[in-house]
Structures are given as C-alpha cells and as structure tokens.
Length: 236
Image (cartoon, rainbow, N blue to C red):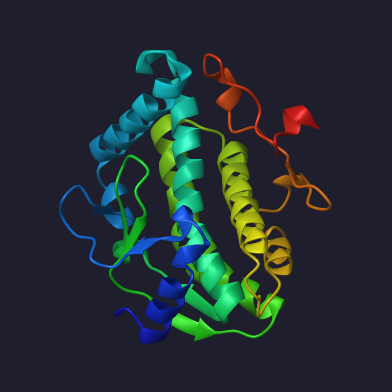
C-alpha cells in the first residue's frame, strides 16, 4: 500500500484546521517508530510514556515521579489518539475521503509530535453511515484497537478508560472541525455519533448532545495540581 494521491491531497488540505491535524509524510528514523514496531518493543513504549511524564510534570511544577505511571499512560494515549483521529476525521468529513491506515505505516514520535504516514489508501464516501463504516475499519479496528491493547498490556490501564480517551479525542477533533467554519461534505457530528455506537466505543459517552460527557476519567485529576477536563464524568 502506497500513499494514495487522494489521501495525500485530503490530508494536506486539512492541515490549516489546527496543530493536531498535521501529518508528516516523510517519517522514518530519527526517533520515529511505527505502531507495529511499538507493539513489539516494550522498552520503547516505556520510554515514550516516560517522555509524557516529563511533559506532564513541567506545567504542574512537580517531578516526573510524582505523576503516576498509569496516569501518564492514559494521557499519552489520549494525546496520541487525538493526533491520529484529527486529520483522518477532517479528511473524511471535509473532503469526503476516508483514509485507511495500517499499523506498519503509521509512525509516532514521543513528545507531542504529529503522526507520520508512509502509506495509506483512500475510500471516497458521501454519507455519515458510509464514512463511519470505513473509518471503523481503517482507523478504529486497524489502528486504535491495537493502540489501546498496547497501553492496556504495558501499563494496566482499564480499557474503559483508554477507549474513553479515544472517544474524547474524537469529540475534541469534531469540535475543532466545527469551530473552523470549513464547509463539511459530511456532518462531523453524525460521523462521530456513528463511531460511538461501534462495539469498542459503545458506552464510552454518557451524553453527546448538547454537551459531550465521557463515562470515564482520563485520570488527569491525579496529577499534583491537576483538575478535571471539560468532558469528565466526574464533573457531570
């Protein structure tokens, strides 16, 4: 699978929507690892979350050791999922191009970098159900399910929390897409609502409209000086 020209054009067109919508198309070496590689390298995964601990600790004015490892893993998963789903959701809803990705061709770097893609295919979609079906296959099953399994096995974080992080990432991306004012070929809210009915994501949200509230907590409140996110169930 190479980088389909339609996928490339669509992903480049959504870059101005926001920082989390960027994609690096030349990612190899230099600290990059594919999701497939991370699944086979526990040490690299732990190094990745160690970087997240340092990043989280800095604004909290505490030492990384004060950030519980499970909390750092959950927050890193949330940030990573947001950087994965944002450009793909935007390409699907703004341009009608559902980008299909494989773990071997999705590249990650620790420390809040954009994702990298070295190959992807494209499926043209026209309706919310069609968009959700293709995104479920090419994103949820192909990439997000292995990512959740990786963090669950590596750090013992509940799948309920981790899939809640994914749901929060989808909702956050949808909010930014709505706020961008860009014309949507397919309503992003409808696509996310369909995805939240999938087996993995079902039950992750207590409510979606008029306000999204997840059914779990990312654990950010356990950081010294932390608080509650706007979609947290503990604030409901």
